[in-house]
Length: 67
Image: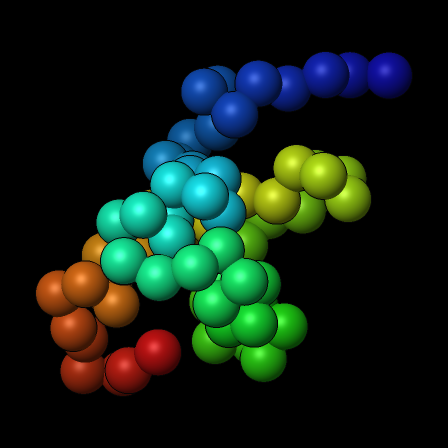
């Protein structure tokens, strides 16, 4: 079985906790956004969900498509 480190991925990822700190919300809000399909994420396993940094930047700096 192959094992990959998040640092080796070709894009930046954040933990749910890191993402919530950047946005200024509770981690449960991030999970709600994921559940509603408003936030892209990578699920390595049940306890290793990573949020794409570009998605958080869209929320912070706005985008024409909206989140």
